Amino acid sequence: MAILHILEFPDPRLRKIAAPVTVFDDKLEDLIDNMLETMYEANGIGLAATQVNVHKRLLVIDVSEEKDSPQVFINPSFEVIEEELSEYDEGCLSVPGFYETVSRPSGIRVVAQDKSGEKIELEVEGILATCIQHEIDHLDGKLFVDYLSALKRNRIRDKLEKEHKKSA
Ligand code: NI
Image (cartoon, rainbow, N blue to C red; front, side, top):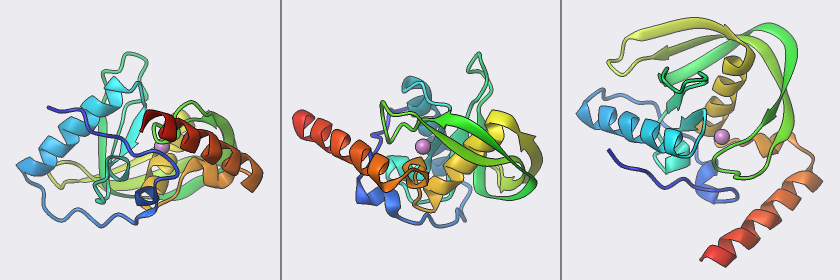
């Protein structure tokens, strides 16, 4: 297994639209294992392939307290089943150090495939519903900072660009 490099905002590669996964092979399993290891190592609760510069529709999530319940969603989509909004202070491994309140529909039905290509269908709410919506946004080139005011987003961008220059 390997720790993968995580792209950080405002890297333009985070804006790419990911393509569907069509091949379910050992290479895909390796990618899933590496993404999970990368997510756990960074103390994240979700990671989309886009964030590690792989532009395929794949995400890994673990919202459990014990960090022992990895979930994999391939070619995920969702429909809203509970329009009422929940608010969470969202963070993102691609926007390190920043947390902002974002509102999203509180209940969704997710359709996806597992690592063997089998169909998964589930209804989720709470933090998992928020997390899945956040990660699917990544596959469409969207970040949680897009939900903030331009003023806030630009402030975050400027601070991160400064950090990136320092560490370059
Ligand atoms: Ni994120």
